[in-house]
Length: 81
Image (cartoon, one colour):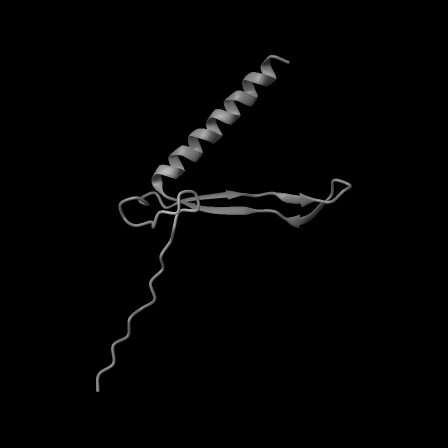
């Protein structure tokens, strides 16, 4: 009798577009972590509200571009006040 051990396979999917990530679309191994605290009704931190996302290369680029645009817009808005 022979025994063959097959290791477990980890399959990741993009949290944005749900594509299965592989060597072609996840070369950057994109991860986005938003660290935050949930606040109670008095404005005090009461729980962890951190969110973590695994992103394919395309979505990582799109999300980074959206963040850059949002920051630039906020800065431009602050200059007009």
